[in-house]
Image 1 (tube, helix red, strand yellow):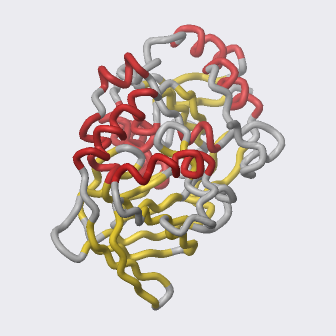
Image 2 (tube, one colour):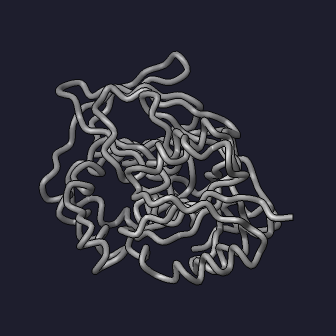
Length: 301
């Protein structure tokens, strides 16, 4: 029996022009009737709302930004999500242990094995991976579609180096579970999933279905002090570091002491502080490889 799938591909994503015909052929051969409205990632929200009663699942080809644009409608529709990693960083796909090859990702969707995952919220805006204030805003401003298309994940490294030269530390108040603290930081990041920023790890034990948000605050004295921390930031082995504060919970309130700062979620500018973080446990169903591969030990390096 065939089932209908809403297929949305962001053709402006880094690999959005690749193998679309082969993707379509693989999915239809696997028994899916495809609904393919013409839309770019900015329209995904309205298109899902328009077709939610016609489809049994939604398949999105693109990067983390494309998925973030669709997330609110996905939560409303409560249709299972299939992901074709066609972006630059593909951090959500990495967290879910999805294959980088889009045709193999099609096979994961056709295998019909799904897992419910948590979703983060910042100021009522949902996100998959990480939301942050500080350095990430400057990195995002420095990233262009052309740079990401040409250099891939290396574009994030270049942008981060430039951001470190221009950014300054700031004082922030962090509240959670009735307790609050103040610190001078360069960045506060709150992760729902495991990976962000082109493959960095929010915490070595993070899972996207563990019912927790993971916060870190980068409390170094000088910008260049981040250099010896890069291996730990990449692996998420942050707990032993005196210059990185880590916290775990289901809600955080982050407020800069001075002027408001930009909030970045899944690589997209979503507003300004104060930043109220919440967790939506087991909020969305996604197709993942069998068996359950969301544990940090089985995620690809």
